[in-house]
Length: 221
Image (cartoon, rainbow, N blue to C red; front, side):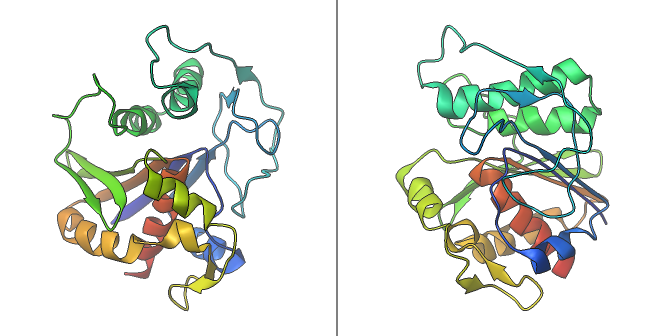
């Protein structure tokens, strides 16, 4: 099975051992809109790959930026919905690979806001506090993870600062809050994608870290 990882606004879920494992993926692309350690006001309009995962990415080329204003009907605030909208605008401006565009659309759609489509998912579940969905398309399975949107998500974000948990020897040290619930989630996902010829794992923010962990499980078998 071909395995691709395309993530948006990624926290760091693991250290060098885990990054080396993800180096075996068929495609590994991170989009990051951080112009500083904590800024979320811009989005890169081109994808870039990195050898190691982390917040401070080394850009291989000079990047241009696309700015965006909050949508007029954005009643939910700008951190979650508008944040992923920035990536969506950047991806559209760059006229990216259709698979990348589909990933950013799905990452927006998985937030549980009024007006977001619910009928597009083959599966839309929460397992061990992890919110995820699957969409199948001609042998390609998109596995999508939602970013932080409830109290449990935020608590897990806050416990993601100490790499104290080792999930498997192949993963090395993992950031606890980002890995929490992922073993159970992978066991729920695995049988649902067994017939796919291509697996595309994607997510935004906390969902991006969870996508990374899922990619690790997929590679480890």
